[in-house]
Image (cartoon, rainbow over all chains, first blue to last red; front, side, top):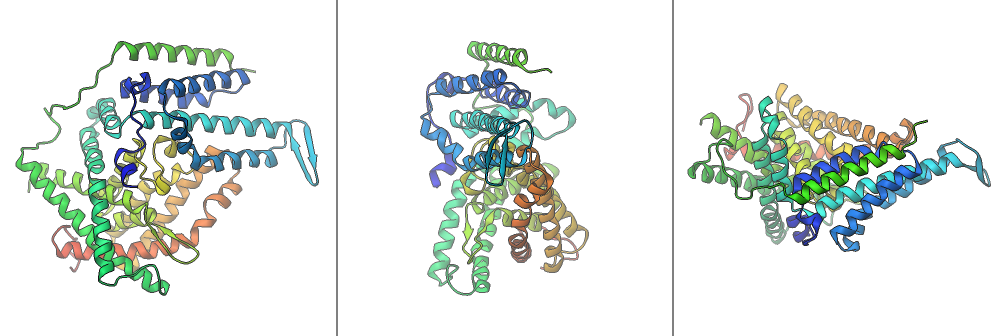
Length: 267
Length: 189
């Protein structure tokens, strides 16, 4: 638990997908997610599937990590498929069983939605599998910079995220410590009547929140003592840079989109 | 305290609250029949302690750290796929819910009965957002979306609203006593 909350789902690697600038990856995924909704024919879906699988194999992320990301949604994919099978009554009856009639339209729509879903999840999870949370935060800060003009606090949001990322493990240890300390004093929220169990949560949460707020205050003072003055003129430890490979990937992706719109069904 | 200094404290409070939400989302309070996940509980507590703007900001931060790939959503899920997935609407709903819950409390008083009402309103807001996204992502009918997205959560939601208002107000009073949060004028520490 500890580990996964610190590094997220990131799987270290040295592939092309790992080395791409995080901004490239985010941009491409953003447009991919939109274009998935435009696919409506067998050929256009195939284009998208091939692209997603190509990304997956280039990333060289072991299949079990990818499957792990998909586990929570398998149920939903199957559920949606079955739902469409029963609810959609279009096309011809292809199968008749007891009181149920399955229509070809239902099967096709069920398949289409399931594949759309699968693609969305596969591609977006590839981002988090090949990029560290800090890299993505940096990229988001950079990409949202134009919003500064409309007084959207981009730097502040990125700072907030980085601090949050940094404090999750610390606060997790704290939670553990508090629950042990209270257990040693006889607090028990696993047995007894419901009312007592709910009451037992309070001595866990109150010290957790108090210590969390204390940490925030200490950090604020430490930052001010070191001269923190907001985002203006701050330099960066990690600089992002667009390389030749990023441009190549953009071009490749443009071709994929063009191909998708060529193979789409316009009738 | 000058403006910059206040701003920094808002940033840090929200950041730390987002981290606490991330942790509580993984904790389950083992009640018989219905284990209560800390996720929505944390949303209610955040709004009750921090108020509307900071509460909502903390939830924005929570959604954002989830979006960059930390498994901070319930059941150790994370990444943008959760936000655009069928249950992502609930997470967007948290932001609105925290804002509205906090706003009701700020316009009235920070007491447990009012907090309970505010949290129930917040729950309705969360379910509203959640169901809309559920319907559109899965292409369901409204009826099916309600069966899958609203009815199963009502009873648990009411218990959580009660817990959130009670714990939230208790913690808020302690924090005001410890001078870590500035209370409203009419509020008795």
